[in-house]
Image (tube, rainbow, N blue to C red; front, side, top):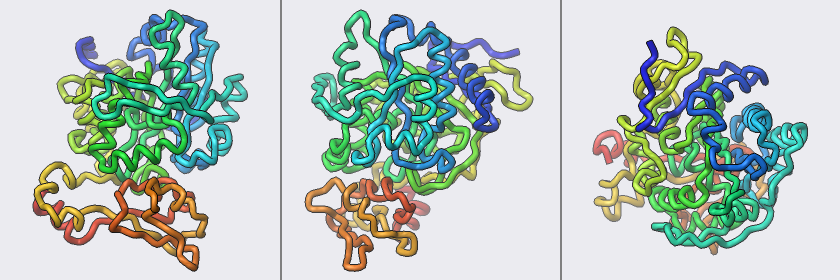
Length: 417
């Protein structure tokens, strides 16, 4: 018999979904939402006429099959379910990694604009920004948010306040190892200000602490993860599609991302966004604090409650290509001058590079740590590079990768840094 759900724990729905078939996806997303309480419970306190802002991952102008962005069928399913529940006041948006692209142009290539247009859902104002003070922030006291998000924040204590529905993508990330529900909120920051945050918070740990504060400010009401086809390897924009066949949902982004980590056999304690968000009280991610409710797993009754470890044994993938080494988890700082040698560095795959210059535009530094040479191939100044990997993240040709030195690989394996 299925176990009883412990309501004192954060719950994450795990639903098996074999493909992006429209009906299958809607069924999976609907079951996931229902298993964590249903929309009436999740959106309790938000009136039917209040705005709900759908926040997919629109990192770059990439077709859905690249697994770089939220798949349009997952976006469509969430939107239709909200509409069928009487939530007609919907908008969507995200601030892409390259602010020159704009929300709608990026969404058009990703397939999300077509789905939104068919459902009569307009894009929100993500083309302008508003400064928002956040006194409760421990590391970031002010954010320049996209205007649509800023307006929602301003109304948080109003009787007709709305909320954000976070529809993220299961992907790897060179700076933070993975990007999921917690990291997806960074798209609420307006345009070029995202680059400024990378310069202000240059390490994985510092950046994650800022992201934790951002989550405390924007507070999405529901998190849905598209993990039917994930991205592994050189993510978040240049990795490879990887079939994982899951939809995850939770009201707790930390718990959801913790399950994501378990499914790919990555220790959540090594993910800076996880540890920072837990310290900031954004959510719970410890093994004893998360209950997984499963549906559609072979030989497992629907509604079975299990641990994250048990879920990984049922449908995880040990071969998922992700950074599992213990690099930069504390003791590397003890190595002093050697720490620079142990850092990962971006490098250019010259045969793929087309000399577009997007990598240069993406560098948050002034002066830039990357420039185009006479042959229009990128040249790095690794002495000034802060290893934020924005260049790698935004390269449309998958022409930038990240590598460790031999000493770093040896240290990670032998010294457990």
